Length: 305
Image 1 (cartoon, rainbow, N blue to C red):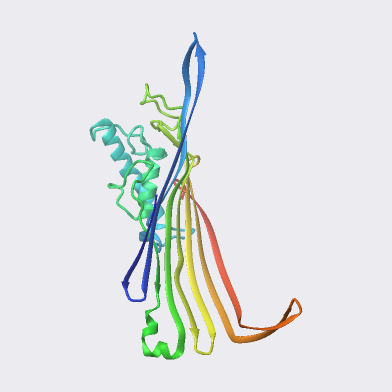
Image 2 (cartoon, helix red, strand yellow):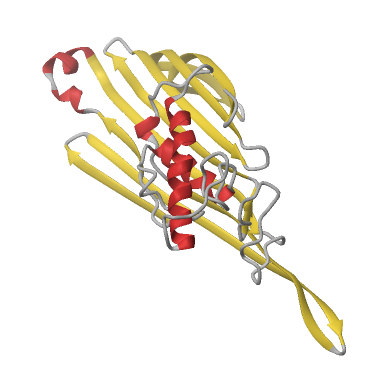
């Protein structure tokens, strides 16, 4: 599902909205023949999922290799989600708890607990309202904004040929691969795994959240003397939660781009095609862009400070 919209709320202000949702699912099944009858073995569903979302509430939160506000929210959200799941499962709030204070069957390392707690923390939403399933139904829009209206002002019109300001935002939630948990027994749903949690019907390896301000701001203009200047600042982050070891890998980046250009108009170039002399006239453009990028990778342990 792809949704595109172009909006012009004001003259010279253009807003491009885009939203997408990609869901793919495959099903495979093995059979064995017993007494001339086919009997199903290991039916398996697997697939991928991606949807646009908005993470802007936590985009500028304090987050470094010492402390992280969203990560601390992730830690505390686990108990909120676990209590919700246990209440729905047991039909009461009077359930037993393990030594860490979590409901029996929905411990702090349970996949069903970690996923919604993680999404709520980095979306900046309330864990008590966050959907507990793997999939999300409604894609949230991302955007590109461009404004050229400053050229309507006399001061800008006198000094510039063109002047534009741009901003762009992209964010997505991705499940790289989900698959049927072959260890889950529909006839024994209360079976627990080695960590003492109820087994999930769907098995996940990891999920990702990505966010890009591409750019956060971009100023691009050309002066009357044909000198062109570009200044751009980008920031991005990628969050990957592994369910194999409960590690969160956070990659943060920022980039500054500076550009300088000059246009020489109507340069005459003599050519000789097929013995016929011809003079071509064209603009000659010079352009130099320099960028500086800084990346930082932080691996966070949920239960180790």
